[in-house]
Length: 323
Ligand SMILES: Cc1cc2nc3c(=O)[nH]c(=O)nc-3n(C[C@H](O)[C@H](O)[C@H](O)COP(=O)(O)OP(=O)(O)OC[C@H]3O[C@@H](n4cnc5c(N)ncnc54)[C@H](O)[C@@H]3O)c2cc1C
Image (cartoon, rainbow, N blue to C red; front, side):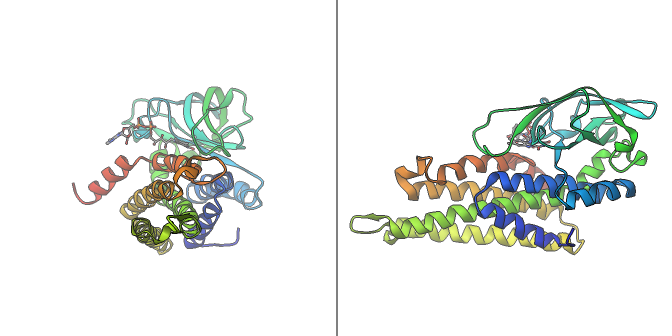
């Protein structure tokens, strides 16, 4: 709503994550990435006019329903079916691990609209109202990210008007290319958030190394600890450079798919590795729930997987290298 750039978006993601509040970051990104960015880049004019002002006012929450029980990395193998009937489609299928699908007003849903077409060509994206009859979202228990929900979503004869095909009728069967066109920004969001959490883990570890005494001196004076913190600072700096390089490329409208995969990989691994080392610096207190360190480690596994695993990022980077 304020005309911010992608660099602005990265700064906000990083700073919210740095506050350590998973839930706030998750809700914010569901509005901005899965709502505003999807509608802005994939929606038709009518959809932009209807949804964007409401999203800018914070009146709508979106979820992003791509993954299915039998297809995560291979998302184009989705089996959820959308069958055309007059002025609407009827959706049947199941999605899994969908963030905030029980809280959102709409779930952007990937479904097969042509079962005979090659798998990447017969897919469409639907803006599915979560109050629709036949839509059920069940939160699952998970080891981290306690302040948002991760849901199984069942579509049982859910009626979706044709006006809710993302991009309009001409986008029927073009859901996959639309999805790919938003991946760079999605990877940026994941990377910038990971960077913020990594910074938070580093800040806590550095402060603790200065105040915790052992053998009569702050533990940060032991070279084993000070070198670990020096390496953490280097890793953080490299992850930050990759995030802002990607944001800059995206703002400049330059191709950046390879850089998006690199940044997603670098920043998510940076966060997990940062949390692992912060755990060592905190010693026994690292395992205690009254300190945030254990939470940073648990939460970091979510972004290592969500948005595409490290193996998938490496596959994409290797492909971009011509391998
Ligand atoms: C907390 C959480 C929130 C999530 N939120 C959402 C959401 O909001 N919306 C959504 O749509 N999805 C969401 N996801 C799903 C997430 O994107 C998938 O879990 C992820 O893409 C991996 O899919 P999978 O779990 O089916 O693993 P699989 O695809 O079954 O992969 C299993 C393992 O095999 C490896 N593998 C698979 N294919 C290859 C290959 N070609 N080469 C090398 N290795 C391979 C993977 O890297 C992984 O190590 C979320 C997941 C989690 C955990």
